[in-house]
Image (cartoon, rainbow, N blue to C red; front, side, top):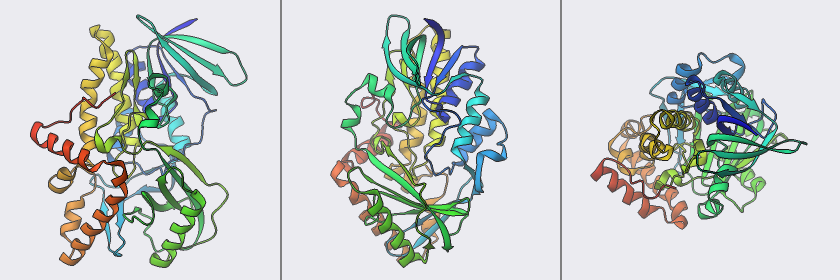
Length: 404
């Protein structure tokens, strides 16, 4: 059985950030990826300014092949049922429009870690001072790796997370998020912006933006509805209300399950013993559905925590949970009504844009947002959000009691 310092599951942005910290500290690090690299990744690709800064500081200037066209995004535009629209520029200027297939592969290569692609994680078992990770190369025999630590950076439906908490995904709402691509006949939506609809009739998460001469029509909804029907309804609404005329969707549509919700109610999962969970598997997701910056920063924190645990001979979970609290504050603040109203938790200035509107439009926007939030009533998140908002106000932080 081969012995290494750390095994990371998933060739993701979170994995690359963790691996960079570990390799820079001189630790032998192996990344397991179930697909052949470079692999396709379902994602809008609109990175936040914070995520952009992380890439520049840790991996250097982005090569052209890791970007879609348009290559950058200026900000976000919110659209409401009252037909009020609100455009907000990012504080840090334009940000990259990542082609995740090539961007993820680039950062993984830049991390310096050894990669075993086309190799699936099967199981793990923790012993006194190490973890035995069982994996299999496609078409081959299962094999074991002995690692001092294991990091799960393998996305919302993380097999590593399931190996620790088999019933976790049954305890939280899971959503389907899908997007279809259309050739454009006429699209008045400004291609410099990411467009998001606060419209309860369109679903829990509806967006659109330009990519490589096509227009994305994206929908997110509770698992159980039909993707085709949802998408068609949204596309018709875009044409009727915004004059967006598109050709029928191309064949290369895509979708995936998302663990939307933990960031709203501070219900994160960070692992157990020598196994750390990081990236979107933990529940990190920014308000407009951007998880890349959270993945990069939480991945780096996971890597740093392993290094720190080895240097100080302390339990890694204690260190990780202490260090990750800053990312929890930053992410959960974005969903905190008190922070939204009285602070600036986002990278685009919603309060300023709202106050620049005529009073009548402000009233319409607030009424529309309230109607939209009623979509989530069935999950009983309202009281939990208000409780943790008060907790943040009174104690300056969020409780760790709900974390797994």
